Length: 153
Image 1 (cartoon, one colour):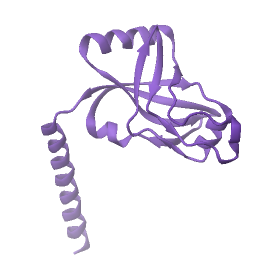
Image 2 (image 1 turned 60 degrees about the horizontal axis):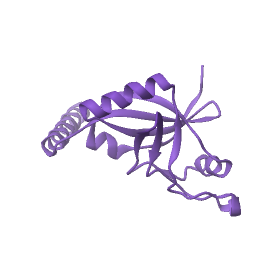
Image 3 (image 1 turned 90 degrees about the vertical axis):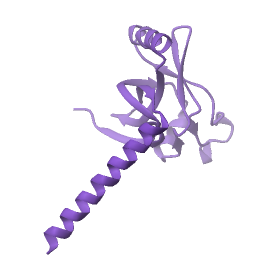
């Protein structure tokens, strides 16, 4: 069984989108970027994926430069290639173009010794959807709080 160690999560994506499906993809990185990721210095907040000429790329992902990297450090915001099967990329391309979905990186994790990205096929939430989710969370929290108080007495 492969060991998974989560490095970073895109909480904003779960707030702004309905996640229909998720896929696992490898990511093309340089050595200093991997070292920086091992230190947890990565941000997925405003990142998204694009498909160009049959290849999938992640844009807007920030990996801080490695302190001891000097000349080997790359641009922290550079576009990075994701590694997926051609059939999966073509299917995603069709769904994104026809149905207006977005490809959003949801999390970054180590699977054994390889860095993997969980890419979500997402549909945008409207403002009222976000408010509804917040109301549900608040109601759930209030119920749990009331049950906890009841259990104490």
